[in-house]
Amino acid sequence: MSESALIVDELKRLLKSRGLTYRDLATRLRLSEASVKRIFAAGTFTLQRVEKICATLGITLAELVRGAAERDDAGAQYLSLEQEQLLAAHPKLLGCFYLLLNGHRSAEIQQRLSLGERELRALYVKLDDAHLAELQPGLRARPRIGPVIAWRSDGPVRRVYEQQVKAEFLRSAFTGEDEALHFHSAELSEESALLLFRRLEQVGREFADYAALDRGLPDRRKRSVALLMAIRPWVFSMFTSLRQTGPQGAAPAAGPRRTTLNTGRR
Image 1 (cartoon, rainbow, N blue to C red):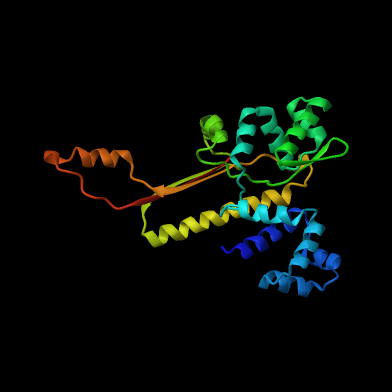
Image 2 (tube, rainbow, N blue to C red):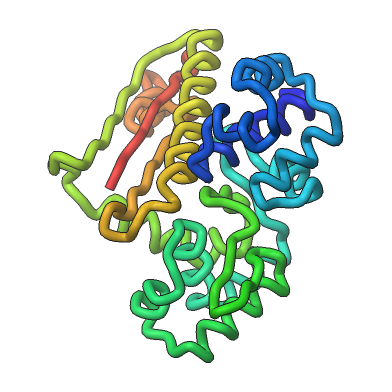
């Protein structure tokens, strides 16, 4: 995706996250709704117009560009290594950041994490210093990014929490009405595997969009939902073992590549 397309996509995501329609934006920019739709469809933005849209969204132009650059193909954002190191070293700070990303107010965060006002303010100050949130008057903070984070595969947060998350997430029969676990194994062509891979990326973007859209909802209307998706060439170890111990010690033949899809929700 081109850089300009990433910026347009980020503007659309921010509009949706704030519950604004093209009509709302048109009113604030003193344009017709048709003009706004045409601008977004063609990606024909002047710098001045982008600045006006940013002002409407309550962000700076720099924050828009940074958000577009840090967003991955699935719609999630990466933090800097220093930001991840800070969160990995302070569990309460990580919990506070997660709740803030998902639209929880200060009173709810205090209740969830058993914090006093002074403790919560100290966490907000740390998040502000790390450019993860903006400290606001009245014991409030606004996240600068999110709501979906793509943690580095070799980063400090994954190193600290990955095994615990995997074990807890899969500790379910996935038989409830609001649970699903799919596992499929088949031989696919490279072309079919690529199409499936792109479809998974789209699902990831939709997950991020829904998270942004629902961030402003009251706590009683939301619940924590996790989505696990995986795809890679794979051969079941049983077949590998059979090939290695074939008749008369014959060397295993080169087998076809296999692709699996594993998704779960809890």
